Amino acid sequence: MLVNSNRDRIAERREATRREILDVAWQLARERGLSQLTLRDIAHRVGMRAPSLYSHFESKNAIYDAMFAGAWTECLAVMTAAAGSPADSPRAAMRQLARAFFDFSASDLSRYQLMNQRTIFGFEPSAESYAPAVATLEVLHAALAAQNVTRQADIDLCVAVISGLIDAQLANDPGGDRWSHLLERAIDMLADNLGIPARGTRSTRRSP
Image (cartoon, rainbow, N blue to C red; front, side):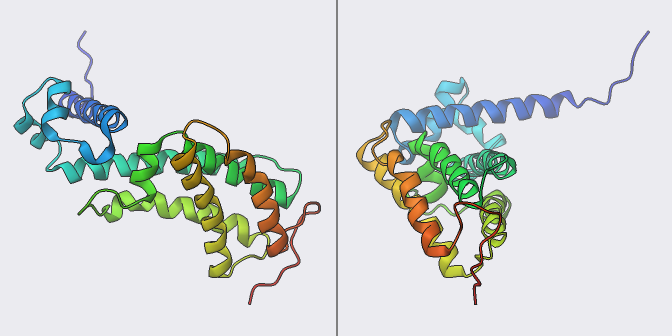
């Protein structure tokens, strides 16, 4: 008996090829540096001619755009899970979020550069690819708002402290833990400044 299938096998093959191209692009970025990607090298490793890539991605920047979207989508999943995990106190919850972002970022230099540093001249992510980055920041906003921390300057300070430690770790001790060890201390100092308690359930800080 013949069974009708709604599967679009052509679309599935195209999607599998796109995933393979992106996987190879990440491999080359980690081997040679993010800015050293070429369509020729990607095509060679995938096993196709360079012009054939254009049937899947219209340009090298389109590949970067898909990589950007994938990286932030992964980060969003990590941060959402961290935000949803139980914590003993508001400060512990803040440490938990900071640790999740730090470990995700510090584990992959090329990925972090694409996500957070303007290392590719002329590349700007599309609105669609930028959406998971915005959603990730909203996870932090929601966690801080739950503690009455809503001023933009305070949110910016949180981002700067965590990102600064990540930058120092990747620049000076990649694969190590020199700045990773400082994260909890930095979060405690930041939490003291923001009035986020080490115990209890909610900050008494009132942001103007």
